[in-house]
Image (cartoon, rainbow, N blue to C red; front, side, top):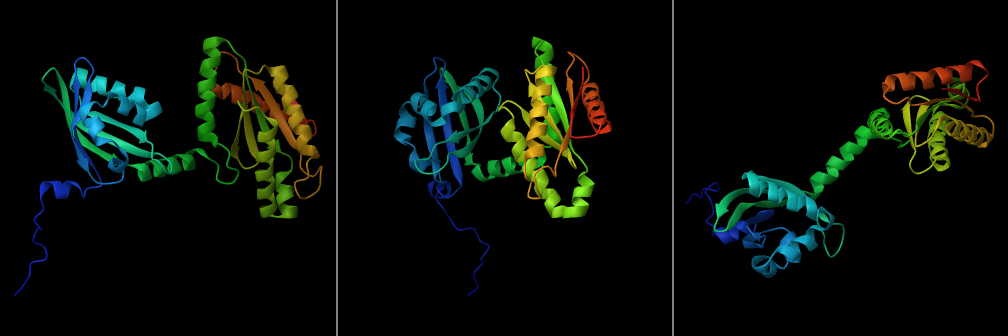
Length: 299
């Protein structure tokens, strides 16, 4: 007798739901704010750590406990969905007794109910997806050799700081940092040693700066340092301290073998960022013209 392997295997609804990698739910919120889950079933690890009886009776306090810092965002999404009868789409971090929190995505459709709103939807564990998103975001924003922010992330950050500087009238300065005679260093010591110098310079620069400052690699042997709340003269002093520290540091080829030229400029409220960067570039060019291993500034 032949058996049709493609024929569907009969399942009860509850048995099928228990095997899906997520949760099917109905969620009710009264007009006075009382919340509970009339229905909550599914598979995965999430339900094993949740008091379903409590959620079925009164979900308010438990939702606040489970969503933690994401609670205001969750409640705002629920309010928006209820007010405009729009689909509820959000995500939150669900704490686990052991290990890191899991990311949970929520998707549900609202419908009017007696004295309130009822949502029918699903919750899915998207922890792996979020981890991949974060990995890809880091690749987009990070220089792979030094681990510093790249040009893209730098410009986003600088644009934000320039907006704050214009709005509040606070100072903002930048440094353009370039390694002197880097091609000769590569030719003499090899590209692996050149890469090592770039990596070490990134570490040394970060250690000398304040936590609110950002150093980014623009490409090649060129870096930019962004210094919020810093006027030109203070930036010049920080730049000279950085220049001296690098010149005194042994990068594995002897102290004094690696030096930098630095150009410094201060943001003028409302000016295009291209102008600020051009002035810092001009200051860097002047530093190289007068002999390198020095700092020049343009007001």
